[in-house]
Amino acid sequence: MSLKEDELLRSYGLLHRVFPEDLHIARPLIQMVQQQERWPLARELAMAMARRMLATGQASHAIGFLALCKQLNHPDTTEIESLTNMARFTLSAYPDTDNSECRVFALIEQLSDSEALDFIKQGNLKRKAAGCNVVKQGDSSKTFYLILEGQVDVQIELEGGQSQSVKVLKPGDFFGEFACIYNLRRSASVVTLESTLLLEFSDQALSMLIQHFPIAGDYMLRTVQTRMVHAMTYSMPAFAKLPEQDKLWAAEESVVDEYRPGEAIKVSSESPKTCQIILSGAVECSSSEGNQLLTSGAMFGNASPFIQLPGDAELKVREHLLLCKLPEGIFHSFMNAYGSFEQQIKQLSSTRPY
Image 1 (cartoon, rainbow, N blue to C red):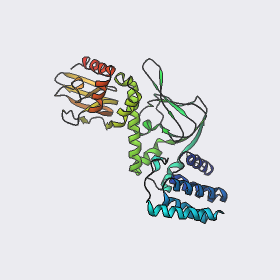
Image 2: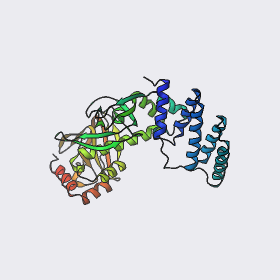
Image 3: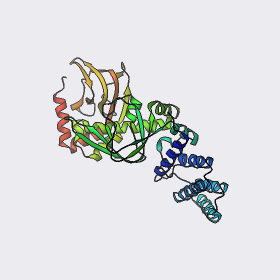
Image 4: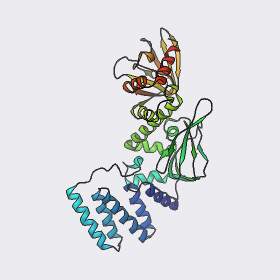
């Protein structure tokens, strides 16, 4: 189901409020307003973007919006002329540079306006009341959500049935990408903290975006992997008591590899040394010391003798596998800094059958 014309205009208006410097949102929004012959609003939007672009050091874009103001017969010709002169001077003295302070929708940043419009058209607006479970941990639903208004709480159910809040998401944030990309059950519950307006997309819409636009796909995959590792730090005892900044450090620096059933995983003592953690799936470990099925939460690697597999171990994927590789330096930092982490690692080592 795609957005109707009035819903698309409303969605772009809300997106512009959340991402005020995003050209891929502002330009189509102005065009849609023009098509409805709402000239005062179109002029206001174009002038506001010209001022914003100039203020953020993007003089060439400011000149483009000022030219649009002229085309729309904006009445303040004096300001248009003044801002145009200022933009030209700024551009000649300080060429445009990337401004990290500008808030843009990173998922569509590398798309053209029409490509971004085609993606957003595939969305569906949904209003959720406060206290509503948008997704529930363990569910098999496959929908991706972008928050336009309101706030949601991401919660992970721990052993024993308690729920822990991981993060509060606000307008401009998105969630639900795990299930869409890796065909996994929901790894967390998401509960609305207030009345919340969501733009939801099917897994097919997200898959098409990733397949057709590699840069957007890479950004999405990296975001997914970081969030998956971060969620793991709450569910695994070794990481559970670490400070939040160290959990985020581990998530941001780790790499997640994907394996299909039947693939072999190389066991090596060579660099780069890592601690490998199974996020999802199962691996059969065979060696002269016996066989074992390693499942979610299992930890092994060449970063430490405590997690080392037998020298003749062979690993073969039994179920679709997502494997986190934590760098050796971070692993040893945690071993040296946190007694709880070291204790859990040594305990894991003592319970190994090999």
